[in-house]
Length: 119
Figure 1 (cartoon, helix red, strand yellow):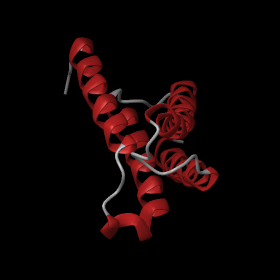
Figure 2 (cartoon, one colour):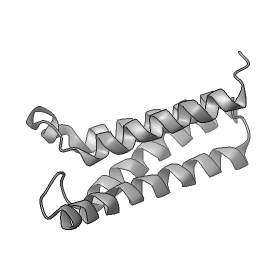
Figure 3 (cartoon, helix red, strand yellow):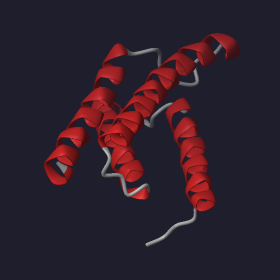
Figure 4 (cartoon, helix red, strand yellow):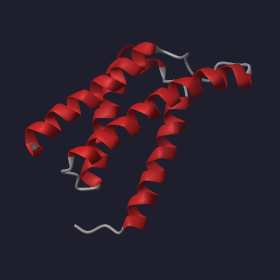
């Protein structure tokens, strides 16, 4: 399947926007007990999505995707904390190191799977 680059960029921008909104809004109470698992799953699927979207079998590009997603995960955590201070009310949780660790876990798990299948 040959997807034009403009369509890939548009798709990534839409997914990025939805992700930012999703991470900035407080989780419904039903999901709060599985927050870390949801972080792990999201970043596993995000890494899979980007690697498949770009038909990536190149280790350098895989590392770039890994780093960009990890930096995004850290940025979202800082944005959550900043938004609570900026808006003077809590629209989301707080900066959580455990969330960043769960994000990293999802990225590492996908990388292991990627290495097995591509390597």
